[in-house]
Amino acid sequence: MKAELENEEDRAVSIPAFTYEGDNSYDILIGMGEPGYLYNLPEPVSFTVYVNISVLEIVEPDLQELITQSITNWFNDYRIGERIEYSDIRNCIVIAYTADSDHEFLGTERPFRGINSLTCAVVGRGESVSQDGQTIDLEEDEIAKLASVEVQII
Image 1: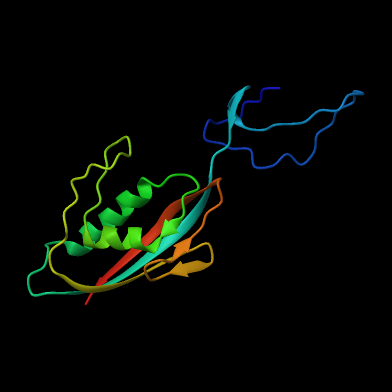
Image 2 (image 1 turned 90 degrees about the vertical axis):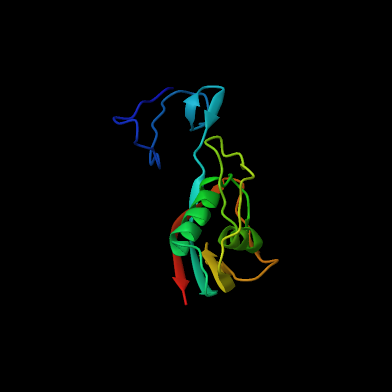
């Protein structure tokens, strides 16, 4: 049975009751799309990135904004079910991350000038990572979404 919601942006989140008066039993599959090609949207998981940077005498103009944009670009390219790796986020802090509209890495990264040292923490899903080798696993139907980035230059 095909159902249409009032607004295209609406999403059904639960079906609390269903009345059927026939003798047969049925499995109900719910998804978006057309029968045979149904899909569900991934469950978003929010993450916040905290960055503290000490800088050298000569520093990149607008470093704070550039790092925020680099991290945002990386999260925008995130794929469903991939885990968060601290080293990936750290790389976005020291090297500008860019991608095209098809989410293909452009390979045009360049290091930011003036970073002396940094500390970083990525928090989400009740977990935190703050050093190389640490990861936060996501379920195969979850996708990481950036809630906020806080970059502090000291």
